[in-house]
Length: 139
Image (cartoon, rainbow, N blue to C red; front, side, top):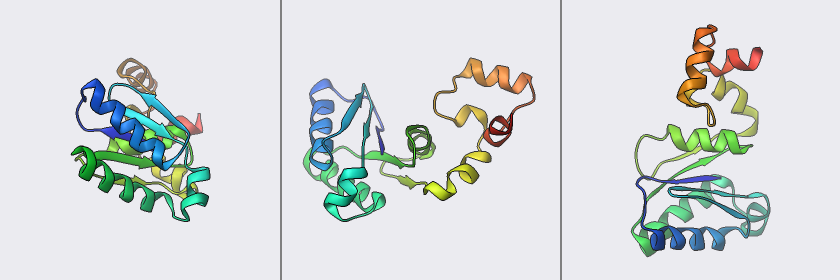
C-alpha cells in the first residue's frame, strides 16, 4: 500500500500520519515529506479484510483524528502501488490494482506515469518511440 498526502505536511503532522499507519501494520516505510509505504500481507490476515477495506478504514481514521485526507494506491508491488496512488487526481481516493490486473492496467499508461521514471528518462524513452508502459515492458 502506498499512501500519499495531498499536500506537504508539517513534520509533526507527518509523524502522526506514520503513527496511524503503524496501527494498521508494523511494517511502515516513511517516504518524506508526503508519502509512506505500508506492508499489507500480515495486516490482511490479522484484520481479516482486503486491501481496499483497510484503505477505507485508514482514510476514516486519518480524517477523524488528524483532519488529513490521503490518496491510497494498492498493488502487488511497490511500483504498482505508488503508480496507482499518483494516478488519483483528488484527495481521498483509493485505487486498488489486483495482481492479475497489474500488467494490463500498467500497459496503457504513458511511460512518465510509471513510478520511478522521471522527466528525463521519459523523454529518452519517447525518443526511442516508447510512449506506453506496455511497450516498455515488451522491450
